[in-house]
Amino acid sequence: MATKPDFGSVAADDGRYHVEGFHFVGQSLSHAVKLFRPEDASGPSRHLTARELIQGAVDLAANRYGLLGDLVLQSWGIRRNEDIGEITFALIEHGVFTKQPEDRLEDFSGHEPLTDALRERVRSRLGLNN
Image (cartoon, rainbow, N blue to C red):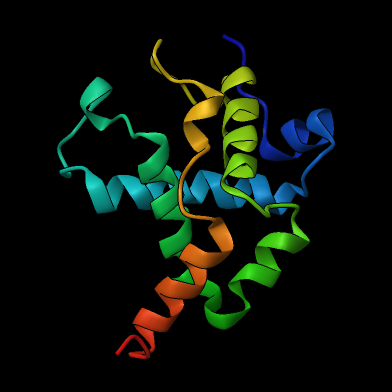
């Protein structure tokens, strides 16, 4: 049985994003599952939409990095929702993640800009949205 590549191998093959960006998207997927799926979900019922993965990434970055979240993500090459999609699909291509037939890279476009969503989430956590 072949072993799945590690994030470092995927990042090296891809070349566009820092390995920490791949780790972060992987952790965002786990975080989003906890936010949006019941604990006993499995198989297709555990599947996330692009919007849910983006929201999970925003929530995780706000929790971990607060006001520096945008700078941290940018240091890894993650500037837009589409970057989360590109990393996700690179992980799919390398067999780290799976997808449903209807999943498309374009699903990561057309959402609130990542920087704005992160700023709003941090402001909300700090109680600054009055």
